[in-house]
Length: 451
Image (cartoon, rainbow, N blue to C red; front, side, top):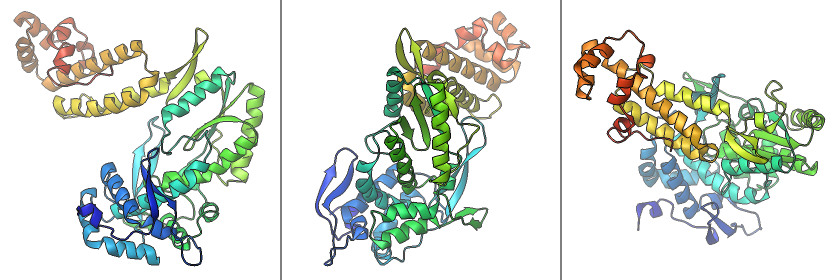
């Protein structure tokens, strides 16, 4: 028997099947006690579910939490202590660690995003809970909700946005939830969970995760609100909270698209947009106890609205999804960071980091990238690398020697090597283009281009 099959030996679910839509194992019928009470924690601790959670956590990787345990050590730890972990979950004594605070700069440069990184063991436990609760809740969520749901994607959300615009809803109401993940009210969330979760052990464990606190510089801070971003459970809890808003929007007959806490409502006129904005903002602050960022909320045209990095444009009578200019500027900012002239890393390492970023970026923005933009960005990236290389060569004699090796005659190499132009201006010189053509970066050094 394989090690991963031995980690969690007992099985309480009957007729287990695989849901191909979300690649999560669920059950036709949850385990029940003799009195008919749903034993949800037994379902969470069931062998197939736990092994599935283990695989997902190992695949996702990630940084260690406050206990310092790395992801690669989790499997061995569970092989030794898995039965104890399961017993603590079943008897209600499992105690999560505080999450580790990590600050991530926002893409637009406006401050930082606060992440809470749970320990690897807590991530595993949360993943096991999430898989079961996802099967209970997901099918009841709104068709206009796309974030953190199996079989749904950002591309689908943007396409739904485009379809509404094509139907004539050409005004977008942008509702920005201020620090949403930090402001979720624990009591309201637990009340929502208790409507379907009857196993008090599960509710107690979720409450323990919410109240585990955040460790900042060896000091643990506690709060009665917020679901720290960074754990597997947080996205599902956020959808459960905002499902109440989705249902209200559906009841009012609005066309809307929501991806996590990014919400846009489509209407036919500016006046209607202002009415909807005021009404929905009142509902969010009054009923959901969340805060609306008035500065970032408003009514705009779809071609000026940034939704998940895209905007909808009208060309030749058609509606098209294109990349928002701010997303392009964010891309350039990241490339500038990687290819910063005085960064002090090798060209090989810079290209390796650049490749990882480019592959992820073009995979996400493939739908809205036009051939002209691809050509312009590729040319700009190559010029950045030329300037980066020119800076690395530093001394005139090194520049002259390397230019000669790349086929530039001595006299021209001497002139260019001793130029007083800055790195960026020098990167456009005709002999620089001859010495370091596109193939010099792609074929010889492995640079990945956008297309």
